[in-house]
Length: 309
Image (cartoon, rainbow, N blue to C red; front, side, top):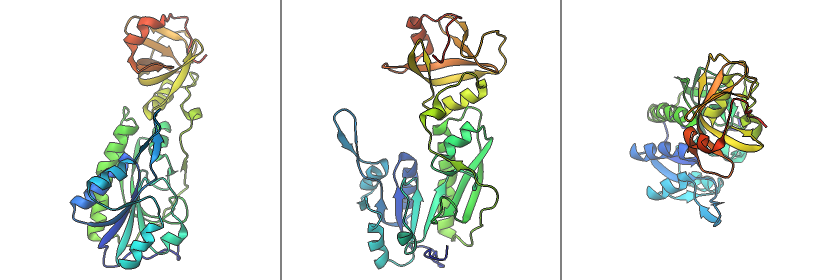
């Protein structure tokens, strides 16, 4: 870590903000509202979306333009700012791109990370915490170093994961805590960080294999997949997303995993290895999202129907 630029001992007077998704927007807005000087906003390049192939800017870029802040897609542009500004700090929030050693050697940077490090280093700490059934996660304000989320921690706070938290609701809770922590450290100084201890775990990006439902798992585990978002299965050879579901811990049934164990015009219970899952909202292949009663109106399921095929 000796190659890293030192944090200003007297505190920072100006900032470069690195971020891309909507999750990062509240931090940029809070810096500006707090009267802190944001010299430059660096975000990922515009992307093409939709059938019309239209170019779409990142949420952070949109927010920066509304705040009349200069925006760049090149990390190296931050070095130009650093040559003219003393006591400069980089603030990194869900940027989505590794920052080179060359830049870190000239600009000290801190990062907002949604986990209690060293648990869940990496790209998808919120999703992995939910999938793993963690009861507690948290926020760390940490130093950006060459290694993946290995820097010393300047502040941390635990946040409980409720049994019905999905990715969006949990990130919302974490954001509230993290914005406050970050502003406190900026205002009062970062001080000496604490070296991470313990065995690290890694939050790899979520892939389809993580979201395909195995009905041989417990209802609790399947419920976690649904809460992460994008969980899917098959019925009668067609793919269907399970957008919302309720875990039924105790359900008397001799049905095999994946088999519909109870169904009527407004409810559909699917058996698992332990408990059942009550489907609430689904999205059949090639169709829009719909409530379960709407889907059941045309699905013609019986207690002999089996999900997963």
